[in-house]
Length: 294
Ligand SMILES: Nc1ncnc2c1ncn2[C@@H]1O[C@H](COP(=O)(O)OP(=O)(O)OP(=O)(O)O)[C@@H](O)[C@H]1O
Image 1 (cartoon, rainbow, N blue to C red):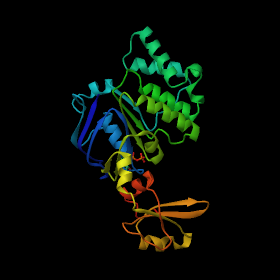
Image 2: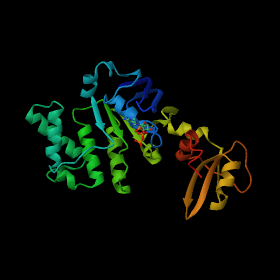
Image 3: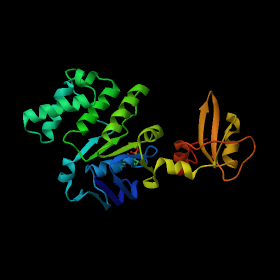
Image 4: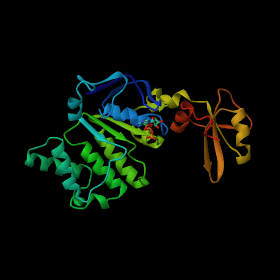
């Protein structure tokens, strides 16, 4: 069992944006979801843990590795699938993984070949191993991304917004792959897609404006909102009025009409019906969306 400890990380960019504001998280093996809206600071946090950028203050340890003073040690046990996996070359999946394995220090040709074969098989691309990665679908590219993140048996795997742009069946396939991987190592899944976390994660944190605004199990967060979420179909014209009078946590169009969810400790009446909270309710109730919902 590995243990990742993130302690009081802060980072302000030269332009004055405070991307990390005293972030602390404790993690063990399994899938951990880091949920937050665009610009919350997720990528900054992921890049910091991946030793690609510095923090101003704070520390991160993986077991006995201090990642700021021993970045090389961390990199040996890290698998990273960045938000932009970069340019996909016109070489085959097998050649690409082979090349990346060389860069990661696998100098023994026979061993490397076997590992690449194992990885291609694991992500279900063995049959396509000779095809150019450039021509792959989004889902297949992400599976190549996971294969490269698995090179060398990492203890910690970071995947940054991996399901953006995948169609539903590709996304499902990717979920299955990640769930399988996540059993034995620490996986941090950074995403703004609530479904990703609901489907995969036993623990999660919600990040907003550089801060961790919630940390715990998805189910616990749902229990906290029990009996407090009410729903109503409203007209588009009346949305602003509802925003003034109620604490709206989400506003979705269903069949062309706005369906709002509000947070209320007592029955608000006025045609609202109580609903079972979902993870989206949790997400929107924790983040600062006052101006974006209406
Ligand atoms: N190198 C940088 N220099 C200055 N500001 C930056 C830099 N990188 C990110 N930011 C800013 O820091 C904040 C956090 O960005 P970050 O990319 O970490 O968020 P995010 O949650 O990953 O969002 P997204 O999902 O859009 O990538 C944003 O306001 C962003 O504009």
